[in-house]
Image 1 (cartoon, rainbow, N blue to C red):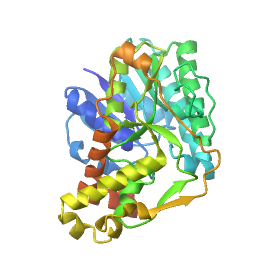
Image 2 (image 1 turned 180 degrees about the vertical axis):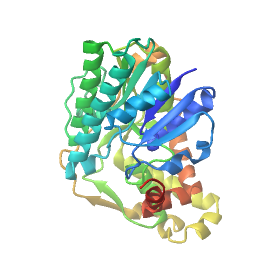
Image 3 (image 1 turned 90 degrees about the horizontal axis):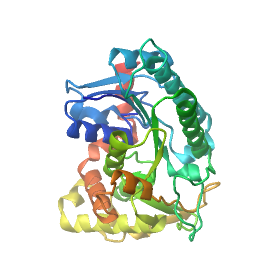
Length: 366
């Protein structure tokens, strides 16, 4: 039986990982630590909040004393670190939070883990600090460049990716200098349930339902590899079970898509849902373009953001070969599930967009 501390477990990827792990390993103990900033949503964990093997702690990863207390009180042997500021646009306009959370927060966790697991009278054998990173640390690719491997030199181009690169290096250093048992995974763009609506895929879905414009940076030909979030959880599971200590593992979806094609694909899927389900017209009367079957008319090209990376692509051969990892969802199946989830969970994304869940947080924790 494992006892896991999951940082950022109320966020998009973290919450999906919590659900995945609790469904698969029902005897394991899970403690979630989340500061519940704008992208952390306690509602993401509603269905499991009363489970005996689940504990939620509202707190900051920069609070080293709190982390040490949790590691000791809950006899934690595995720390999975998702907590991060992750939106590139926000990092451009306000980089300070990214430096504080992504660099100093990771450093605080490493210090706590070292103190509790290594510096006491008894070293905790078999402990694991798993750090969840991003493909953006590798920089950008041309259309003909080979995909990023674990040996690709780091070349971050935004304050967000630079802060994640720094945290990756700290994790590596704590293994090589102090002997902390670490692994790191670098993933491609995630999508799926609980995705915060400021990101491309949920933004397109919700804007169509509100009949708002679909903003496309530049020419829309920026290419990303897309990974269904549950496949990401599965990949981390394999790293935790069989990954080699001190190693990095790329987790990708084998789905390179240009942004404009993503938008057009979602537009067609939403239109088809309106054809197949007449109730959607009554539920979303503002979705005029979807009702009229011309959602692509909402596409609007806007000025590209500064330093916008042209292409990301993950080569997951190492993870495939060593850990037998293969994504279970194609983009066609994953995006269909995602569109359906947003159509079925209007209350969730409406509360996120109007901030009502943040009011609940204030009432409960402040």
